[in-house]
Length: 255
Image (tube, rainbow, N blue to C red; front, side, top):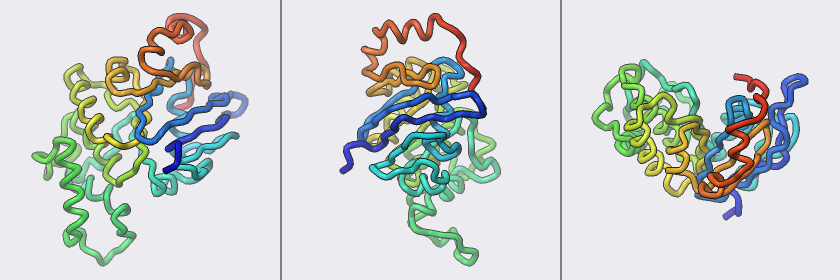
């Protein structure tokens, strides 16, 4: 097994004259859970977009299980074993919960584009979708249109879609944003369960969620990793405290 699930070396990204990511280095071990925190505009979402292929790096290197993925298309990176969720819930609202999850498992089970194959006849896809549906607590919502789910249920469904294809590296972008405390607590339990044994990177503002899930916390400020350490060490880090409590406002991060 490769010693690192994900390795980022001197990663940089500029938009015109604005340098948003300024030489990030980060290594993530297999099965490790890392939370990425930082002030608004620090570059967290840009970093996720670079790792998942939505943006092309200006320079630097991203390795997934030892294979360079810098500049690959998102679907290529996904097929190599990395999957992500988004800040804004990204599901098929007109499809049922089951249909959303079945769509997510098809490629990983070897099914390619086919206009003559009936989905209902794909027993393994049905079974895999049902397994994921039960694991995220939405078995009882199987036939419900995704657009009719509560907000917390939609977020759970998106997490289910993210893990359904069997990726071993999972990126979650603010998975508990907009949730109540009880909903956040339930989401932490869900994420902990469904990502067990997988490598997890998570952008999150809720520090109770961060401390409840992370093995290490990477603090991103001005497009650089200010510190990456255990939750307790980050809590006690004077530079991290200063970054949150004082200093100049960071440059605006692109949407």
